[in-house]
Image (cartoon, rainbow, N blue to C red; front, side):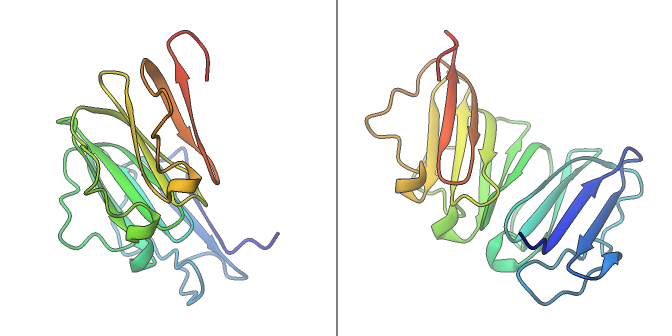
Length: 184
């Protein structure tokens, strides 16, 4: 396996990015993933980070999220309000943010989950994307789950009992939900 890029959240709440053959520095790699995070003032303010196949999103103290990476994979947050964010996740080509008011928003490649117009993203409790997955899942406060993205990879829950869910997680080509009774 060839590592193209990796981003780490350190115990000092700062971020270090490594890119293919460039080491721990500002990466200007014009390949799959530009991990140039030095454009942001993290200065010990990062509390969470999520990276997908083409972009990263960092959650800073004060509930502000910042993104970087391939613009078509979620690395462009133009026109998106990323204030009051409490949870973040990035998948293969899209990212999602959960806001403090229980709403969620997605951006990036519409095929990969960046277009959430087909689902109701209110009363959300948790969000998940798989790193190389083109599907996003959101667990609602009432214990139901909504998914979107590539239907054959988990983006369509028609015919699946997704009620009484306490946790949801997406992997490469599927999502799994844990129910209150411990079943998945």
